[in-house]
Length: 210
Image (tube, rainbow, N blue to C red; front, side, top):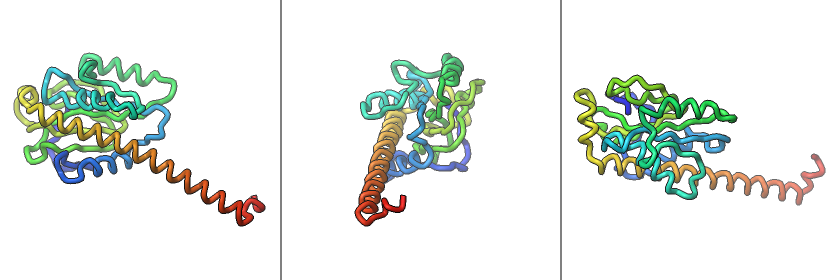
């Protein structure tokens, strides 16, 4: 969980705005390499705090999607939090294929930005808002502003409405699933276009020039 107190956000969308799901999928398609051989989603947080449950909620939603084929670390049942984060990062780094990690976490920010979902390149720094020294994680960061930062952050997180984190986690997970489905459709469309081109080329004699 990280604190965000400025408006210099690279790509963001409010989870309640019209078309938020499609806009999120656009952003995810732009920034996540779904063709990567070892794509991992690390959903950080704890089920013991309503504000910090965004990651585990998102992980549980993603794990429930049978058509979402990627590894998901961090759920309500098995959270990825301060205690096991360092060891999990070490395990990930030892995988035979260098992973591409999408890190998902809650954060605090200005009151006007509550509900914003932020996506940017580079790692996030879990626990920074509550003065915890934890290792950075992620090639891409997805953060949801769940409440106001700047004062008594731990208490603020514990008193965040569960409805906010639930709705945002659900929207992030559905946006990722939609992005994956659109990625598959794009690949199918490209493959069909290539097949049609090759067939047409053979019909008019292009194969003679190969």
